[in-house]
View 1 (cartoon, each protein chain N blue to C red):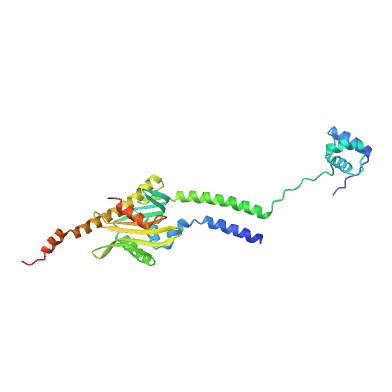
View 2: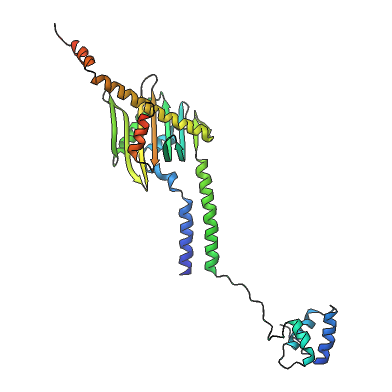
Length: 152
Length: 151
């Protein structure tokens, strides 16, 4: 690591002049910072200190934003959770289908119609059963059928 | 400790990935009927999730209608026999000693009631209808609505 060369007030004056003209190098600017951050700096440098941010005290280094691993994991989990939920919803909606003679159809209206048709098949058969049961309860019918077995 | 939490979150994400609805009927023998015959000619298979059909609210609705296939009839009846264990028989109708309609109520899957409805009619053509339902509604209400449908 390169050491920052210490400068005296006279050199500081020259470098500051260069700085305001925009001609300083990084190393020279670091030397100015080093010089202005000293406790005993002549009063004539107060304006420069203000410009460089040293007036109110020591210049603060920018803090690195540190996000803990757990927070990252939580963010990632929430993100993936949302993706999975969205995907799950999409997949489930894609699962609405009907196969007719081996041909797949995903049109929701058509699928619903086929579903209702299958329910119709069942309810139609239920009605048949109910009708036949009603017939069995019909006294006249039972009597007429018993007549067949009567020996005259 | 941190690592455990991360593993927990990963497991949670994996659990979310596996949608229970899609696998709910896989424990039943009748799931084989849908797999075996669903894509054949002369067959209509339907699968719906989270839909309202008429007045019915279904979490999952699967049906298969098979025409003129005696082998399918035999296979379905065998599957139903196995699924009957642990199920409550709601209704069974016999014609000439053979059950032509079987309604089964299976143990609940979470908050959903599960039903298997089977019917085989011989006239005008031989037609088998098998329906698997998962519904948050009361099974009796669903059946009442179903039976009244054509009245």
